Length: 474
Image 1 (tube, rainbow, N blue to C red):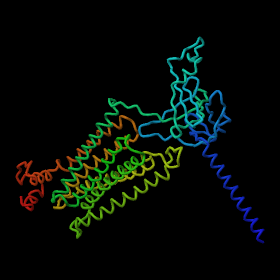
Image 2: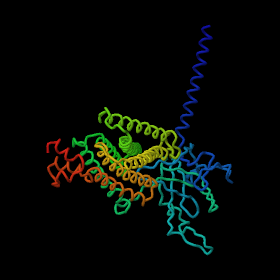
Image 3: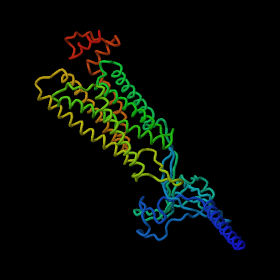
Image 4: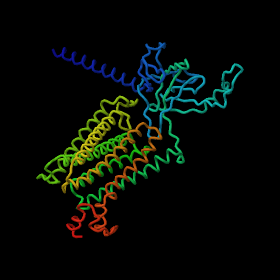
């Protein structure tokens, strides 16, 4: 029995050693093989920039890398194909290269790098038949001096079929540095004018928030809503400024900046929606003297705003990371190479804002009709009349700004420049509507700061201002 047990143990140890040897051998094979980037799947080729199965084309053999080796040796390394688009840096952009007789040359090196030979068009001549040829054809060393090497992850190659030219060639998508001059109009607007306008917008929103937070006469329910809305707009502007300087960051920071920008903007529109509902409900209700304080009402509206914002934000983030399809894959790893939030996540956020705009429009129209039918205004209704005017102006201004933001997502330079201007105009108009356009607010500012006093008599003031002056001891 002891001998049988010893024999079984020896056989088990031998099998284990063999398995370990096979596993190590397979691991060595994977480690020794070079990685080659391929744009489409293994059994697909590019047909006019679209990945198409090879059985749907006239080709029979998919693309396989042909390594450029020395003339003295004919050695080709082991390789493994990695499917996906290249992952470019913040200061790079994608560039398309075609390997044909009339274009540049592409070659895969044994190290896995893609070499791009640049053909100097000035050295090409035209023969008697109208065909172009390289004047340095006899000296291959001179014609291949100018080249660029792209490491794995910075390129993807594949076979391309150009139906318009009836041409089959080798295609590569590479990451090349962006050439930007500070004198360019686009660079000046995006890196000088846009940050300056963002700073002006932040200061404007901050002034509104400070005025409505510091003055005790303005810290009612409407004033708290305006303060909360402007704070959300400030957060959105700060996060949007981070996205301007794309060369100083990584894909995670810009994704977070995008999420903060749009979620804060969504919260601002929900606060505007809460303000519209409050004004509409006040004019609709017969009994406005309810046993509910402004603090309790603000808690109720805060629960509605932040609860709705959180639910929609979670939905948008979930849609971006799980359902987004227009995301380039990374050849080296499996995580998503996405510097900004995708169209699906943006659609969830922007659609929610669109619904709040539609509801606010209904509030504005029904409240205006109710005010026309009212023959006698009470003290609360007289006060709500000014709040309704402010709500209508804010609704028109913010809706216009949101519309230009939506158009700027199309990435057309003209639309982007228009949004840069509209963004700062929106902030200045909100500052005017909430502060300088209201005589009551300017009166309180003049009394509090002991400046800018227009010297108006109580008869020239709007309702409530003389009572405010008496209650405040002015």
